Length: 123
Image (cartoon, rainbow, N blue to C red; front, side, top):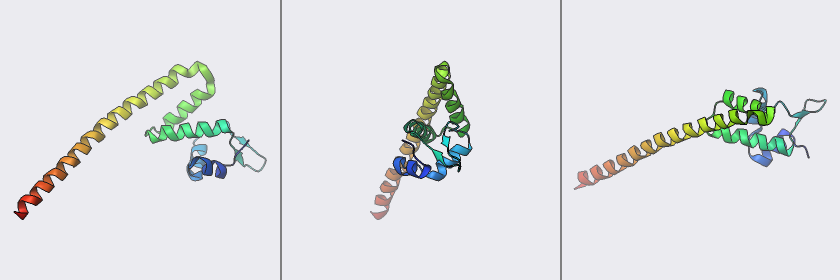
């Protein structure tokens, strides 16, 4: 079965404007298109779209996502390259999580400090 961008938006929750942007960036060169220029997504294309969404949610830049997608189109000969991209992103996420944890701790300390000072001022 083939789906239009609007149907894919409804099915995945990914806004059609974002899907169109990604198409313009060349992330889905394999999409089928009819004589009117309407693009159609297969179930496999939707899975690729969801993978791109996942990568973007990790703050991966479009250029690297495109590189990954290009490697995917080349098949199993690029598995090592794709693994490297994913491992790099995992390292980035771990570093980002560490920084976010430090920020969380600072914010929690600030709340404790403010509560303690508010209670002292009322006494």
